[in-house]
Image (cartoon, rainbow, N blue to C red; front, side, top):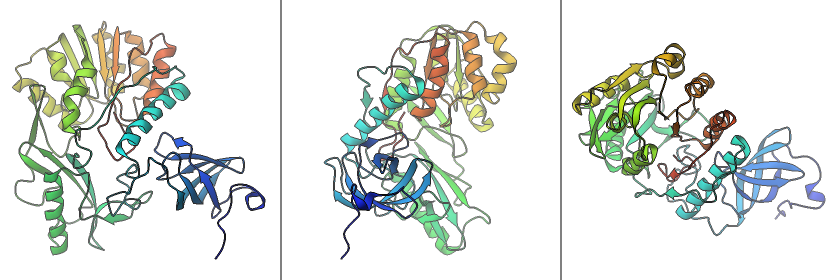
Length: 399
């Protein structure tokens, strides 16, 4: 029986390298969901850790003074650590927080936001950052993207950090209708009834059931709808709509707060989640969306609501602003809800040039949010409020 390597003393001599094993104490959770630890004068990122864990970890890669490690053994578990209920956890790349109690997940997300504001945006975060928990900690995802390996007849999600398919029979975070569609789709895989060349499937649930792209069964092409704060939104599997529908009402309310006035811009507007309520508060609204299918649905949703004071432009946001900024000046209010990569630099510059009185930024990545906030604050804006919504339980993402 060999002794585990120690975090000090002779066993600790030398620099870390791939294959090194070391005993670490995880200090906290960082943006990206990894645990922070230190050893041999180097910073170590530990995957799937809990703050306070004492673990034996194996170094997988080293870049300069930064090492990335995986847990081999939990020597002393953190009080925040729980047993992940999903049998695929750790291999499937879909979830990375199942090892944390839900209270610890919320706390970690608030601290990640606080860290990004301080370190990236270079602004002092509010004393308190409220976070709204998800009413459903499991079975909340109304949208899923499944990967198909036709040679091995596998269907599921990518394995963590790879493009290999992790065969998943039951997804613990998929909403019940989505899980039921996964079960039937897996039967189609076994029977060889999938469209030729189909390597990826998008499923989305709504009031009309589940839509699937590409379609396999009759009815997979059906459009869906959801009613949020009295507004009905139509969409399908080919365009984005938020996955945790139970939190959309408070999310929209916070995004708009008491905004009203003459003119508003809704950037990265999707199918119009914010466009419709904005059109009830502002005399003129312009929504800009790069996805043609989503933009078409936004126009339909506005028409169905009887709102004629808003128009939807189909264009990459930065390109449209570069061509049309003068036409929308002055603008009282700008709301932007960009993808995880954040807003493009030209988009941020164009918004700053418009000098709107208020900017509402909806983000699912605190790091890119903080990057863009820094540009806004360096141009004279100040952060008036920050609020988090846990749209993605069991993962490091938030909103």
